[in-house]
Image (cartoon, rainbow, N blue to C red; front, side, top):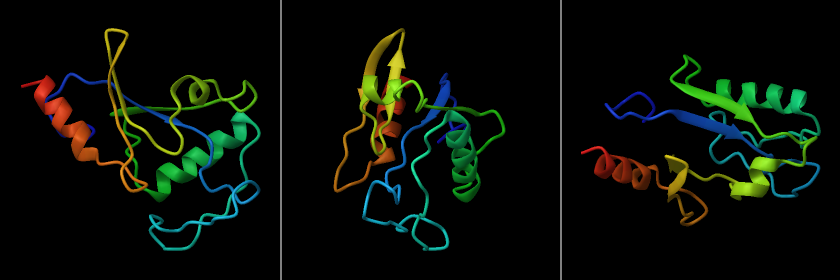
Length: 126
């Protein structure tokens, strides 16, 4: 969706805590990994390490890094303030317009339907 429509949208991805960190969560997952192997990573304890892991994620999943979307990481040293404020774990999509939360995705069957966000944006920008 990023850059695919004529919407006046600033895209931002916030990389938060690992959903399947092997030092915290006994359930390993490889469901969406391109090679099908389980994710094997410890929970980053520093922002520097989270940035490294985020870069690996972007490469593994082919997330565009051409400037169409900004990417930031939540800070473990600061107690993960984005996570505390917005409850995004393990994944969530938001639309904030003029400082007001206008859309929050809701998980369905342990996933999110990007189509819900697309439909909201299409309605908003028609």
